Length: 349
Image 1 (cartoon, one colour):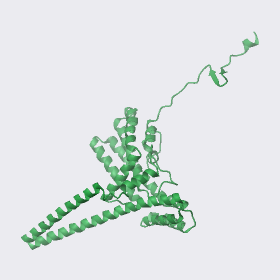
Image 2 (cartoon, helix red, strand yellow):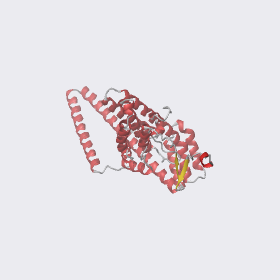
Image 3 (tube, helix red, strand yellow):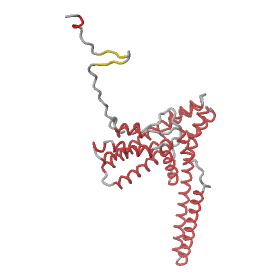
Image 4 (cartoon, one colour):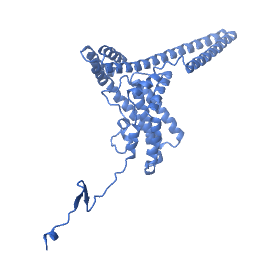
């Protein structure tokens, strides 16, 4: 037998110097797509940077819409209703005095108490709105001072940030630390970064826990709720409570009218970052690609509602935060609610 006959056949050979042909091609296994991971990526699309936050703050907290057509209409309507109610109460008290001095005195006392309560309510609402505007303005000023590396402006605004939390006992130590940084020779940019890392980062962690807890409650309750109307009421209630809670964490403490401004800013942030469109895509991805068929339609709805609740919380977090995200990474849905996704084994806090 010749040497060429003894020689085994080659298993592979090259064509054109760069292609290899094998006698047995390796089997190709397609990786199964993780529907929940896709949903997380879609939910984190267009989180929105500092430009989006500044835009929604300008439209919500800092917008001077008193002299707009809508503002004039609401002011005139409110004044007309107040005037009509005052005249009615005045006439009613006069009738009571005509009937009996005792009844008139009681009616006058009740009317005075109602008027005093209304004045206190208005004063509290004005204070809450001014506080929200102060936080929004502080956010913009700190961002501008950091961008310009303005030491004087950074020191002034960082001290304002410390005053904002002077009544928070849990922030006494980081507040003293930041106040000591102000006295040292530090660049304006670095001073703002130190204030964010020392004073605001602990508040971020509290806000994340609140968002995670709300998303978990919504996902569980809507998954077991027997009625769609109950789902809507519960999700709306949780969203309202979450926005108010996050505002309180960062020092906003909104009242009734202040909450409307907060909701306006959060809604504008959701619109700018494309959450409405993302929500439709999430519905197609999570329910249309087989999760509902694998598990149940109600469980898929619970996951979707939890995702959207987390997005509302993240938008409120971006809007209410007194400093821009610089040293701290802006969280996404997977950061605050990893338990909503099958690929992540992390438990909710």
